[in-house]
Image 1 (cartoon, rainbow, N blue to C red):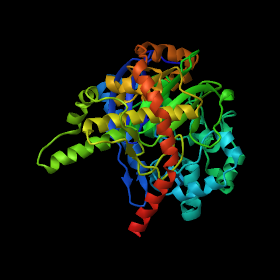
Image 2 (tube, rainbow, N blue to C red):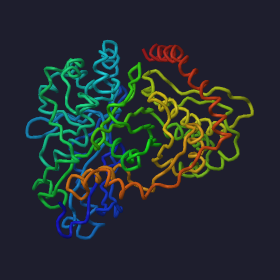
Image 3 (cartoon, rainbow, N blue to C red):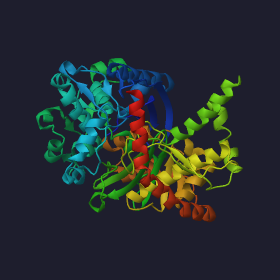
Image 4 (tube, rainbow, N blue to C red):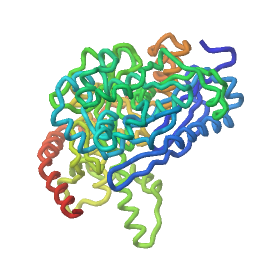
Length: 522
């Protein structure tokens, strides 16, 4: 329970690009936010990693900075909760010290191991986790390390994720949450580790590396004296290990509201498409793809398909324009170009060019897995210009979302949108029509941190359960429902089968291009 005068909950969200600490009042009002850029290193061999020690130091810095913005923060904090970027592997050894840098979800070093494991993957593994194998995941990364760098695993005592590492530094407890534990090593129905899954990865002998599963909606640990010293908060303050950032962001943005069949699309650097469903009613696809992540609601899960790149496609195209202007001696900022998007969309006809938004060098993972998948335009003519390309790119994001929802059983009648790009009226109109569903946005600015704080709110008894918390924290912030434009939706309905057929037929082309690239670099 909350103590007298303790009216603040803090949500920590350690993303790939930014670490944030956000203060909320107990009923959900956002009070203040402090952030520090998150930095990672990437290499030509596909490595993507960041310093574990620096990540904790940056997290502690955001909490100290937050105290400068919120008077009496330490005395007023009822609890804090931490979420963060999913997948990846953060190895910890003796005295809770890092064994090496944290491997991120972006790390592609285990791609060959992922391919090998998929070739012999038992159906039972997919049916237990509801999640397809890919190089992002801890299970695949551990299997790769076990083959290539076993000494690193020998030195480790526990394998954590980003948020788990921060939780260890906050509380001294080695733990992970039900969402990441289950989609990597467990069973989404029982919310426990599964020995069959662990064996399918060849990791039975590394079983001791897997930490205790702690549900942060029902259990907390106290802030340690050392963490209190570094953060400025009070020793013993309850700390909740929230679910993975995707779940928390969906929760804060309205993915799940009781008695409603809804979905949630995060229009961010990557594209996340989610639908909430009772765990025992999920229908798994014939070909393994996507994720199932349990929600901090009994019996409920998020079925998820993810695009490797969403707004990164827009950034790529705008970057081409900026590069040309720079080469000609001009100057233009990214924000200047973003400000013109609404105008460009307003003066271009819809549905003339089809774009597949697979701009990521890692290929695609939803609703199909192909590391060779690449972006492409179809239908270009001499009359098409830059604005037409931009429209095609954004329409491609809509088609990609529909492709993902179809793999999960169809587009829900209403999709809640979150992410910076969702603020664009024109973009929402295109996405709504491409999905042929109503869309609704939440005015919640920091959905991920809010989802984490909501977990803490339930854990300390500020709310009886997550449904009650959602009634205060989410539902009042949902904007009006925006129905799809009938004519535009009909046009996209007619084009979508071609979009999907083209990507299904493109596999051999992508494979040939990848082979030629390997030959060139040999």
